[in-house]
Image 1 (cartoon, rainbow, N blue to C red):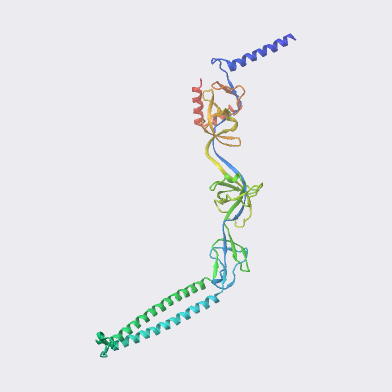
Image 2 (image 1 turned 45 degrees about the vertical axis):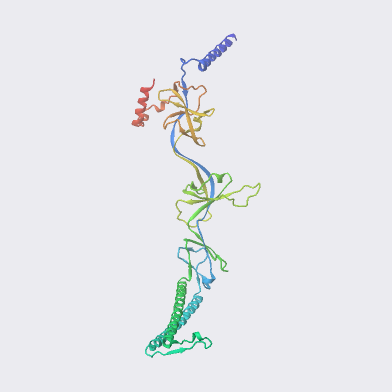
Length: 418
């Protein structure tokens, strides 16, 4: 039994000495690192997404109102569920009231024109009388001042024809002013008559949307007709935490249940007031809408449910490594690089976005460099490394698969290795 104890003691001493040499030995001692798992730095687009759910709703609604001032209601021209296009007639006003109003305007215009004709005749008669005065010799009369006033007993001459002519002139001007007033009244009624004619041409109220008649109120309570558009929005709800992460303009990936079909959209609106009155002890939800990048051809999809992925962060052409290839010491991050010269390099890196097991590296690494996946127990930087052999890959076909650039890089590494 003593020889077994001696052998065990010898093995223990051997291992202890080697361990001490590994960790405490001088710079002259070189140790080879055996690497079993490694990968290359990749370049890819990273998308951080927030899953959510939504439902299709109409993008627009048009509410049609009945105005009794425009005339009596004559009847609906559509039914619920009918498809309509812009310009489609929805309901009509009765022409009876409009025709009666138009007849009133015409009667008033006729009356005013007769008044103007009468004024014109009167003005013509006054001008004829004024002309006739010029052929009659004028007469001059005298008037005495008050007999009690001796200083004003002088007589004044008075021209009768001139007085009559001036009176006629004033009368003509008054009649011309009255004529202009009647002409303005006629212009007003002509405008009203044109409006009535336009109303007769527009007895039917028309649609402004391409959509579907959703509701008709036959009791004529406004809005009497509701139209929903064929264009769609997607509506969803966010939690209190989620609403702080989402802003308008973010990309959205839209998928259907039990389908691989995906369409793209954009966050349209985010409502920062809750759907219901806030209550203590009850979580609030917030509405948001998604605008489709391309409208679907099918129209009857109101209420269809979809799954959403909202892109909250995006990095294009990011350099990435597996998350476990990133090491941390204190506040610094680093990775072990398998150098072209056969030495293992410990390099400081700056991490970026992390998605599950994929880590973005902002600085410190280059595309295509080899990084150690897991740190071996006794790995040491600035020391040589070896990897396990792969005889199955050392074949003629494997060399034929290499590109000219890869062959050149391999030869250059061989010359540069010590």
